[in-house]
Amino acid sequence: MFQDNEKTRDIMIDHRYHKAIIGAQGANIRDIREKFNSVVISFPDPSKQSDVVSLRGPKNDVDQCYKYLHQIAQDKVLFNIMLYVTEADEMEHKVLMCQMLRLCC
Image (cartoon, rainbow, N blue to C red; front, side, top):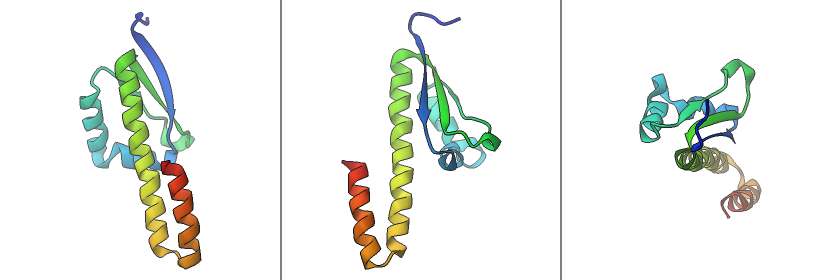
């Protein structure tokens, strides 16, 4: 049963990044769960390929965890774009840099 201070919030994180966020043998998610130890973080079953990660716990902690996970996911996307840009030709490079700037700002 929920208390007045508890909330559930879903965050959309591309399922392709779940494994990287969780980390080898769960090392990254353990660190995140230690940082936000009052928040229950639930990733979907990998076979479902769902992008929805659920957070449940005290309102303030859930909101902080949401922001933290959102930043991690955004960093993963930008890192992948940067990797692609390094392999692109000059014209693709200009287009991709413009797209990356739109994501950041």
